[in-house]
Length: 280
Image (cartoon, rainbow, N blue to C red; front, side, top):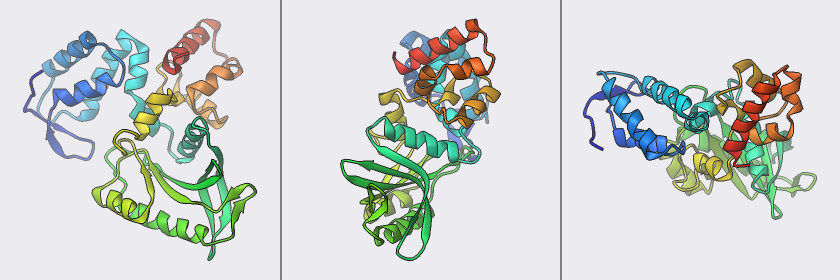
């Protein structure tokens, strides 16, 4: 697969060379087979023009995947689906909490705890194997925005204040052993360096390299309902308002589909999509 030197425009406005290898890598994550990937790249390359946006390239590849097999498209749009959890950021906190629950953690969302100096509303308190973790979520609703060093600096100071307080922050939750910073975008280099130095655990779309947010979602098949190619935006928002943030949850609570007045035919298609994504 040869590289094309034509420049494209990222969401940040930066001009970068188009890379068919990067496009192929993102398509591989969707589970698409080699023939499908090759045909999509060939079609995209035919329609390239100087200054085309990465969003437009994504939209074209997504449309072709959706036509080929919807489950490919759902996985391909994972990053965009997480952006669609907004705009308040609270559904993202619920998503991270639920993700941790499926990894064996007991969690609490939006609890106010006393620090040594002041009280803090914590996005997610997580407990596992007798240890408590303070998890703060930084959600960005717009592409192209990264999580800079100010975020871990601020969160580290909150962690230190809570850590210096009493032994229990909530019944059964000891004072936190570690502070986490979780974002749906990327960390800047300074943010990563500070996090490492301060002893914070950082989790972003692509960090740590082999255990990133994307890796965890794919490994555990914990896809957000916003990744659906069959549900409307109104239906997704209704489900999110009922704390249904994962496909897995919808599979166990199908009565919500009945409440939305979804026909049996469409309900069958939606549940088939859920089963394929969650590997049921």
